[in-house]
Image (cartoon, rainbow, N blue to C red; front, side, top):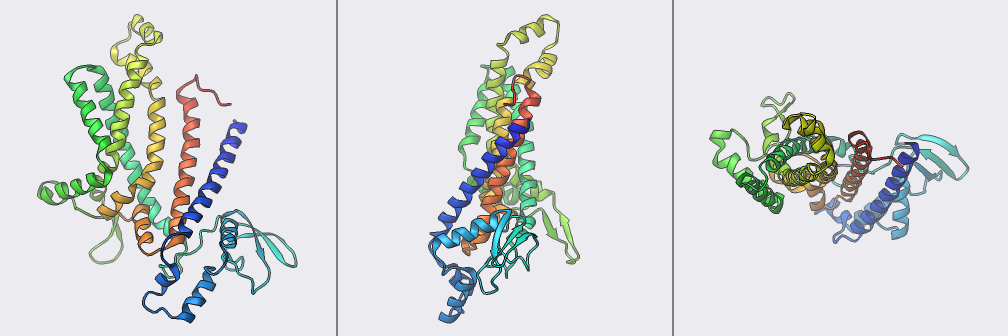
Length: 358
């Protein structure tokens, strides 16, 4: 187990380094000048030069990259020269000083994602703390809907194999995989939030938390979760349905299923105790991939429904060239993707004894 976890964690760290490098290179060549966006219409040559010096925009690309990786690393190195340039200041930010020499400090800290260009110097970690929970709530709700409906429809399709029910379910699931999420979001928002609003009482847009009428605090609006969760869950429902169907059809050809029937077990007992459990491996694989991708794929859905999550924040950051927020968001999604994959690999050993940890 320890060797397995170490192998997965080391691969995950290498993947994160690759993602960080790729993200840095991509966002470094984006058209536009973040310094000019920060100054807006108040741009002056002296102000522009001062801002570029403050944020290191005037440094060579390799130095900017070195500072970026140093800020992300839990173990970072910083000059003790008060005039030296640093994004992370050990005096201002929390960190454990491990070693100090005449010219350098070694600091153990959480990965530093820097500050937003557009939110008056607000820490990117604080921006993520406000928006990521909303996206996780949306993704968990969507994947729960997808899991329940997908397994139910998959079992139903397998039970009525090669009948009208089976063909209808396959057609609907194929259609669900084909329709883009942004198109589904627009249609659902217009139909259920506008055309049929009197019947559904659902809003076209709205977030998980909303300020009450008296401005005294935030209130959870569960109704605003329904439409975006359904839209985000359409594609995984289709995938889980087809995977459950095909996996069950394969499992029912195995000898132990025939043995279970020979022992006098009912169809329901065979399905629940033997077939469904052993057919879940490909479903869990798809589930883990879709859950992680939902954190990135929720961009359009959140923006259309006005859901104040990480996806909507990414769109806003792109509009204003808020590079630290963009880079922090992408790295957070990559980190969660890696953690989820490790967790799923461990779950395999619990649901299928044939899977061994090497």
